[in-house]
Image 1 (tube, rainbow, N blue to C red):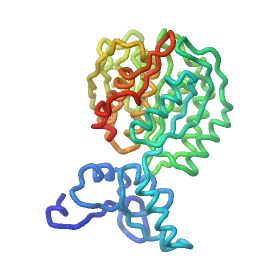
Image 2 (spheres, rainbow, N blue to C red):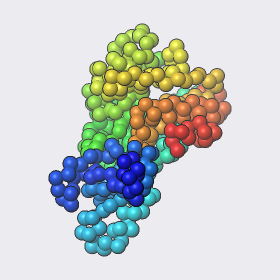
Image 3 (spheres, rainbow, N blue to C red):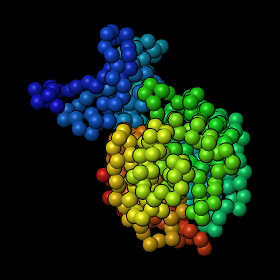
Length: 361
């Protein structure tokens, strides 16, 4: 802002990573890029340590210009390298991986996540954990994917396409939770960390458990320590906080933060109101919502968490991303398809653009 006021023609933001071309300059990481992308009053350039891999992270957060030295000067073909870097920057978007099962009915799971990630402005990738035979009346059969294959999917994406955000869905067994957590620890970059949204799928609408014995303990021990934010419904929040019967979403969200060290977004589908409640860094935020009198709600939780992961991958602050996820899930229920004889599938693609345009662009 000061540079613009003083008449500068452009500015740079960085160094993003440590680089020998800027000795003695401490890297600032990526935290300033989303703010620059949204507020800058003059053209700006990302700078510092950018190469063929890291430039994708900058692009996901809104950088569209970059200053690059070594990745071009040291290249065998500098002209081709410059063209490749520019394409990755200008055409880049948040790459968001969903780790979940496939819903053959199209309402939830991988299918819902892919639609939600695309709708929120990201590029979806996936690691499929199970195949299901299901429709609006229920799940008729499940075929789990081999644990090593799940890890191989995560590794393949992380090592080549790249990952800017992750959403995990129903995992089902302690072994699967441990395999997913291990692969995320091994394969994701930690400088800076990739936002991870854990949709803590523990209970069905009927209240029946969706986790094999030991699954909740594995979730607490292995996956929640990696999470940026978890998205339990009221029943799941009660189970994770070990507070049966507690219906105060704000108290549950604070308890989950205190216990697990990750932000908690308790969704409002089962509480006394339709509001979501977010607690992070000592601050509780209530996100107003409504309950729609529609039976097309299968997959609303998947849509919510996948949208949240995408908006975080794009650099939105957590409260704003949570509001965008709430709007997307509500719109998906409103645009749900009245198919089948049971709970119809939500459809995040079948809603007015203005539902989420303030949050997803």
